Image (cartoon, rainbow, N blue to C red; front, side):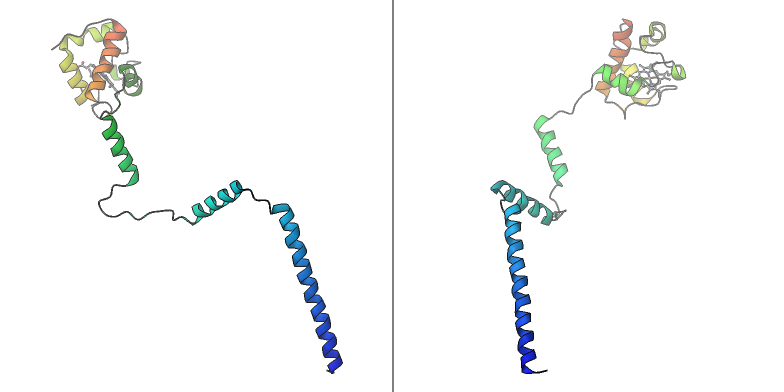
Length: 169
Ligand code: HEC
């Protein structure tokens, strides 16, 4: 290779490099025209998303610290001090109606005056106890409703819907 060829190569190489640099500058300028106007808002959003993407998806909990969900549930319980009690109609519709609508397994239906009239002589305490613990064909309902809710359901299903009065026992 002669010295002349070398300098020719170097010149051409320099032209190509200069051309590429020129194209890069033009592309940067074009990109800036289209995308260079990020508002502060967009910038903040991008940063927020970036931070969210980088955040770990779990946190290490030290022994004895309550888990976040439990902690908030505990706070809520402490705040209100009461768990929700359903009304007699709600309990009946949710729990009792499956059997006490169509004489299922001989269960007296809602509003069945004759059917209930035979049973209510046992009095409140016995009836509530029989529902909580189960009686004959009726499985125990104590797990499905609290005693207070069962009392309300009996009140609604029997007294409310038949007009009968259940005696105290
Ligand atoms: C899985 C079906 C079923 C469900 C659910 C059910 N019962 Fe019953 N219940 C029965 C049957 C069957 C009887 C009749 C039992 C018998 O005499 O053998 C009965 C009887 C009763 C009696 C009369 C008990 C007695 O001493 O004669 C009451 C009161 C009663 N149910 C209330 C309720 C209430 C309130 C609920 C809802 C909290 C409820 N039941 C849910 C099937 C059910």
